[in-house]
Image (cartoon, rainbow, N blue to C red; front, side):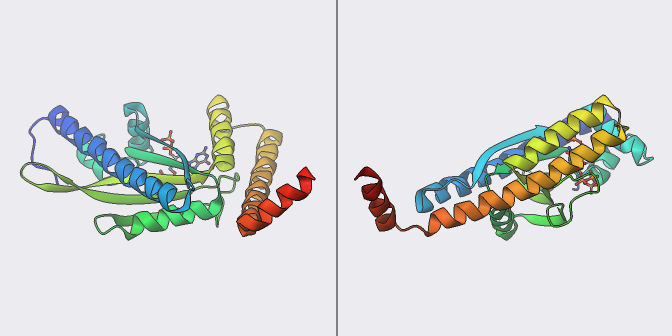
Length: 221
Ligand code: 0O2
């Protein structure tokens, strides 16, 4: 992202934050439109809910320090991909890929990086689909491509990730071995649950309206 020259880091940061905030709005609107279209066409909601946030300054500083870089706006823009972050929670794994595909297909969205932790979960069991994208932000005198990290996961994956996050912070990354093992076991159960829910949903979809009516009549006899 190419920013105009500001002589003051604070001024530059405020202008940068405006871009990140605008990029979150752009992506949120795109998602809302897709979800509404789905609701209308298929009477079905692929997105359960969406949350978005601007990364806290402490968290940004930690990431920059971790990368051994100087804490400068230029470095934040270049090296911190998730200053603007959106989390999309879906009901089923198939919805995750459908949403990711629909976002990637939009002509003004550039996909910069994808990490599929569903196909390849992390060692601790973490599972989610991550995309780093950029969207153009139209200012009065220029257009600036701005990065957003999109995380897409199921309700069950999100449940797991939020507990793991709490445990990670509580033990400052050094949770006892048995807790880590149990968390990993939970991640496997989450994977199993998501598969079962998906196949159950597929089976339900295959019932025609007539079959459901017939079934209801039999039950009511
Ligand atoms: P927070 O508090 O959520 O902001 P890259 O984006 O490629 O430069 P990075 O940041 O390591 O490198 O990317 P990755 O692996 O895609 O992870 C980014 C975010 O994914 C994390 O942000 C978490 O939100 C989430 N995440 C990744 N791994 C885990 C995990 O093991 N457990 C949980 N609960 N979440 C995870 P931050 O900055 O760590 O935190």
